[in-house]
Amino acid sequence: MSQDLNLSASSHALDEETARAEVYGLLSQLYYQAPGDELLGQLQVAVTEAPDAGGFLEEPWRELVACARSLSQAQIAAEYNGLFGGVGKPEVYLFGSHYLSGFLNEKSLVRLRDDLAELGLARSETMSETEDHVAYVCEVMRFLIAGDDVAVSNLTRQQAFFAQHVQSWLPTLCQTLQSHPRAVFYARLAAFTEAFISVESQGFDLVA
Image (cartoon, rainbow, N blue to C red; front, side):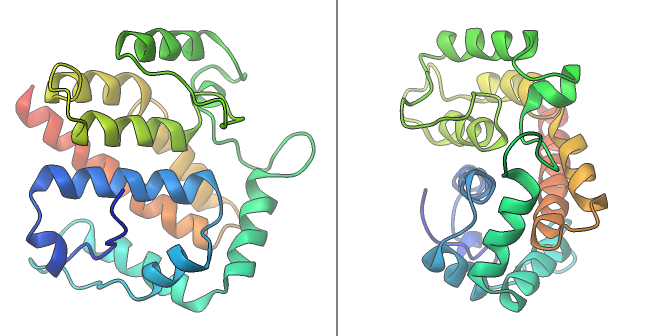
């Protein structure tokens, strides 16, 4: 994705589809692993004033950037590992099948793989997580918005994938993170994610 994280003045010059794709790309990066120094540095200097004051995403974005500015890369990495890593059961699962069925690697993952195959997509061998990881589904949404093949990357495909594999469980993950007593940066990220998913849901409803 583009590394421009300014969701205000600079993003205003972008078309809406490009801006949506960049948000999904950013979410994918932040949920896949703790941000490195370069990405965190860009997040810390991101503009927080939206072109249209009072926009639905403005306040959760402002809070996320403020939190990023208050923490070091080591602190965020420790939080990521404490919430999502470790040996055995993590504090918070990042996999859709957990929220959809209560177990990992269930029928929802099989359906996701079938849908990905229909789109001509498959998990990279370099990725150890299953395809229902939040970072993976966000990256698929980015591809469905920004990809060059209009037979795959189009609004109909976006809407279907979003309803089945994003909207169906991602808000629950966001609520889980926001209520977790040890989530700080990732609670703010979850609040921004939840607001963004809400905006996406409303947008898809308008074109249904």
